[in-house]
Structures are given as structure tokens and as C-alpha cells.
Length: 339
Image (cartoon, rainbow, N blue to C red; front, side, top):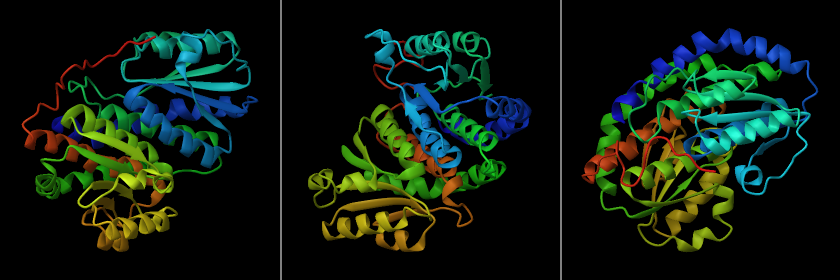
């Protein structure tokens, strides 16, 4: 897992170099179509990448985005009218049975379909009208890292060709490389949490998907019961579970979410909770029990990928400190096929 985390800057750079021309052509084609809905369909880490994609695509393109519930298709056999929709399947392996069934059903209803996967010869690639590859090579660890960020980068590139807002996604690989220098600080931080059994992970807006992803990583690699919330939702009830020294981990970049994170941190301080922030905002760092300071040049729009990398390191190194094998979590396999 640690080796694959370190590969991410190179993988991200390869995606940009290899897929950019394809996406430019795809964007020109899609802009000529009458699309009024985008549907994302995924499971696991790919679903968390899609949660990020939902925010990014709605903000930049102004098109409503829905996260598909595959059971609507696979268990209830519902027939949806998707004739003016773009349906995007996201899967590391491209072999998720339920994801592929949604794509097949969407095509029959007249939707345009795209697959984002790591394997050019997968079932998903055969079904989809167009396939975007993450070029991550084989991911040996059960816990997804480089394929997760590769999927996120594809959403940046897709948003850039679908909208008038050009995103500087070419800055992301260097930012990702810079965050790997934080390994010594992450190693020191995990010692504080070796005996952690429960926690909450908070992220709002573009980093909301990362809160789900870190919580998943903590559950699958460290066996920590991790709940995830938006900082706004956290005040609507879940705050009641916080007591002295209860750990709350925050994704808190500079940007429009700062005030809600400041409000939450002030309240957590009153409750004597333990707050650990991944941030490049000095005020947020000062209010946190502990903080990982990210490069100040990273703006909120480009923060999700570089900000999740120290979170991945945190999960991998915490598992190691707990004496667990992050690469082979109990009861799990790399490819999960559900219907």
C-alpha cells in the first residue's frame, strides 16, 4: 500500500499525457449532445471518487449529477428514461457485475456511456461507448490508492472539457509529489492514535468524498469504526457522540469551507475532543489538536487529490503501528462482485 501511494504522482502524470487528446475529442462530441443529466455508478472507493466527481461536475458544468443506486436496476428491474443522460461507470477492475448491468440498461434506454477503469480489456470497457483508463498498473494492495486518485483526475479532465471553466489539473501531480514529503510527520502523528477504535472523519464540498474514502481506509486496514460527515451535517445530531479525547479527523483546505470548519473546531475545543486536521490554513491548524500542514499554494479546487494522499499514508502507517497487514485485510478481496 505504501509503495502504491508513492507511485501516485507518476500515475497521475501518465493519465494526463495519455488520455488528454481522447478527452478533448470526447468533450467536443458531448458538448454537441443534448445532455441534461449525468449519472455516476460505482461501489467502494470508486463510489467515493464519484462523490467527488458529483460536486466537481455540478459546480463546473451546471448539469445535475446523480449517484446511481445499482439495486434499482439489478434487484428491482426498474426501467429509467436516460435518453438525455450521460452515464459514467467507475470501477478499478471493470468487472463489477452490478455496475456493468447499470451501464447495459442505460445504453438500452438511449444513454451515452463512459467507463473509467484500470483495465482496457475489462467487461466495462466492452460495454461502454468510451473508456477512460487510469493507467495505474496492477494494484496489489486490497486498499485502493492510486486507482482512487486516478479516477478523481479523470473527473477533473472530464469537467474541464465539458465546461467553460478550465481547471489547472496539470498542477496536481507536482502537488501530489510534494505531499509525499510529509511521511515523517504522518509517522509521528499515528503514534497518538495507535489505540484508536472509533473516530469521525469530516470533509465538506469537494473534499466530502475524501471523508468517505479515509473512513473506508480506516475501517478496512485498521479495523477502526469510522463515521463520515460533512461539517454542516455534523452539527445536526452526530455532534452528540463527541466526548473528551474523541478523535475527529478533518479535511480542511483554504477556501469557502473554512468558516464551517472553524466553527466545528471551536465547538470540538469546547468539548475537549481530539481534532486532527489536514489543512493549509494557519487558523485551522492553530485550532486543531494536531495538524498536517499542506502547501499553501494548493487552492480548494485542486485540494482533493493532494489532501487525500497524507490520509492514505495515515491509514497505512496506522495499520503498521497496530501490527496489521494493510495489504491483505481480513475477509476482503481485491475484486468484489455484487448484484
